[in-house]
Length: 538
Ligand code: NAP
Image 1 (cartoon, helix red, strand yellow):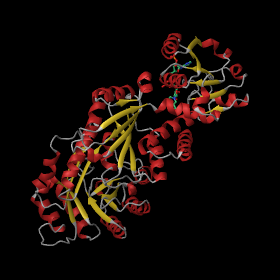
Image 2 (cartoon, protein in one colour; image 1 turned 60 degrees about the vertical axis):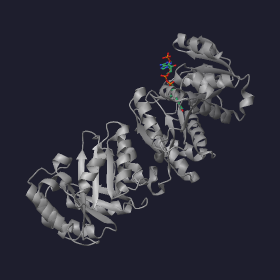
Image 3 (tube, protein in one colour; image 1 turned 180 degrees about the vertical axis):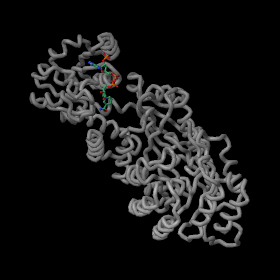
């Protein structure tokens, strides 16, 4: 548990037996609170509910009972009087510690206020009520402008906990939700969460900002609201137990971003080195304005402690433009490449964050160079004069040609679309040859920067086997599959090989080192990527 913030699993079984099994699983998975989502029950049988409540009494942490109506995102759509009597029955059983009722139902119904108020001792003069009341408001369409007043309106009622959950249509909505959480949590127990993919940061960082609880689903597919992460992800991927008020925040900005491997690699690296950081996916819409709004939004909230981001498609050019606009430092080679993938934020002294310093780097070329040097067993100085055949002239090709030329390599570019090879060659002082001539290269190193051979076209190769007869070192930037046909054939011809995982890991390692000033646990990072790729392939 982060401070006092609970990690609550909503139980969404359709029978009481399933929910009872969920209690055991939630406890085993490390949840300290569960929510019985009674509205998920397909039928209401009092004996079965009684057995569920007996099981709930054995749960080691606190139990919340919620019987959510359809109008607020739940499944219950029968009579209100019946719902409140059932909730009262559950409350009076003594098995639950909290009852969650919608603020709106509470406001309009004297029956709700009387029955649930009594069960929750809201008017009793006691510091130790038998049960506590959570009053909640939900918006599944968007995030209203004035979240503070939503929470203060709830707090005018005798609620023990005020809860709001709103759909984040953009990630800036989620930042506004954190504002509201911080303000409210300073004076009362508060749950303030953003729903949807863009709201993920409010769920994972709830403990950093003193929320009463955050939710995590028992398993993927058992979410009670959009955007919930699973209990296992919360505990293992995001290292919930290690997140505290001083934890520094990092993430990957992209669109889409849900399948990025970076959170797994970077969080594992933080854990391994004992670095107090957490790394999240940030889904930011493709336009420059959305990118700038998110990063500006983080910079003006220094208490968020956002210190850096990986930046991926489609934002690599946006990052350069943003940092240049703010007068920050852009790594010269990143500027020449025309893309950056690493943002660093150095906090200033001002409370409004206006004196923070931003900078941008490109660790894609750095990762490729580090992978190549490790494969060749030499140092950057030794690359001078080494001849390299680069296949491809897209984004990866461009970064790698720039990196190779920076180290003094003699580079020949072979690209299917000849014009692109010519333009790239002129820009970086390389040579361009027709794609068909690639088999006749006489280079020491061949680097594949095309997407040929990538899953699912695993039987394709960008270089016919004759092109491997001179035994160059072969580096394939494609990492899915880990061993491409190109690498397999290269090995069979006695070539040394470097795979795309190595480049991927080294670019992440370069980010880690830039952000933390600590040596990256490269072997562990490689294991994480390899395991992820293998499990995706199965
Ligand atoms: P990109 O900008 O779309 O460029 C794709 C390149 O592949 C172009 O040069 C394109 O040639 C060529 N190509 C595509 N299909 C081809 C075919 N059937 N035959 C010949 N050439 C073909 O993509 P990118 O961002 O450069 O990525 C390229 C590869 O690099 C991807 O497979 C990706 O997995 C890999 N990569 C790896 C890492 C890593 O960390 N390991 C990082 C970035 C990228 P045309 O110009 O003729 O279209």
